[in-house]
Length: 124
Image 1 (tube, rainbow, N blue to C red):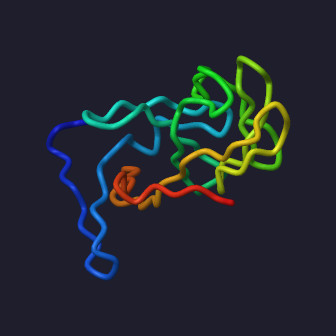
Image 2 (cartoon, rainbow, N blue to C red):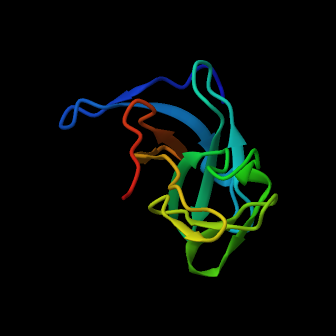
């Protein structure tokens, strides 16, 4: 990501959003791995005109979800053990995955996807 892009501060929530990727670089078929200094690798997804960010590493093993397949119903399949997660919530959907993924709040501004990296959460 271009170093000229600055952190967005959401005045209402107080969250800081880090620029990750230009929207045009994402397709609905393939997530992208994004590395931000000081954070674990992230996977960024596009579902129609909505964008989502999760941790990139499968909670079941060392699979990189950005190397996985986006399925119908908004799910990502891990390329290692073939378990699936809901991209929108991080919820584990198909065995052997049982632990949810960390998801991050997202904003889009001026064609750039931003995420609040200090505000990741897990679903129950």
